[in-house]
Length: 322
Image (cartoon, rainbow, N blue to C red; front, side, top):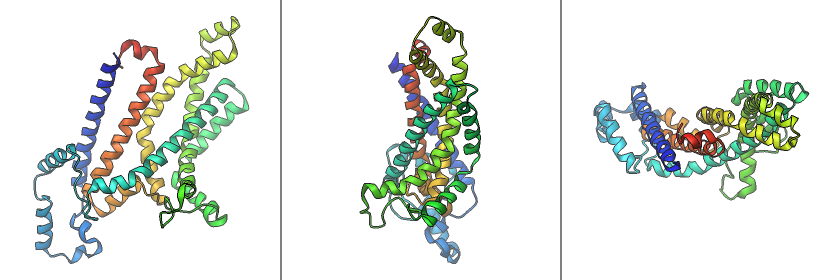
């Protein structure tokens, strides 16, 4: 049963990646701009028509878009993401340099968001009408309304400019010998911005689910029969975690959208900053590579969330598939 469920999820994941690649490729090709600018930057205006035509032919940009897409897809399936227009290096090599930073930022941020939201949501949800309940509602509205880039600018002003305790940008010491402590110091502000802007809304969602579960008939019966409070609480949190995980799965793609802004603001050397750079320079192979790797991370994250839900939800195990 589990193998059938995993197989279906893997097929869905591959289908999602195919749709993402198809839409991204055709939208990118429809965007205005000349790829020759990626080769010569500010000097692109000095290129002659013959030079532009030579570049276009060299990278097969004169072929129909559908033909270009099929060629790109067949090479990507083999693991060849192409050569960056701007850097002249394999896209896979450039992405390998940036991927660890994105995974570090994502994993650290999600760890603290899940930890904080479960604690806040459980405390506030179990104490309906208390200061925790009302306080979390206000906190979630306030933090989710704050634009990430604005909060990031405030952090830079206070912690880097005024206090001088944290670096304002980058992902490590310029000579690359800063060590773990230096990496953590560079990670603190971008991770904190993402945590603050997401933890409230996640906690709020869990809070409401717990309040609904806490008012169910089976909870009243359990309390009337003298079941230990911690046992009841464990059951409530377990049942409330299913819609919470569903909400998390739905918001992971938008979470990556926000992380692109944060990475750019703090010059964090990850895939988000790389994607922005590829868009600005019209480096199409690099842009497609960044989009596809980000898509794979999102699909894998959703698969892990689905796996957790499968483990805790008996309805999924009974039905096998959802």
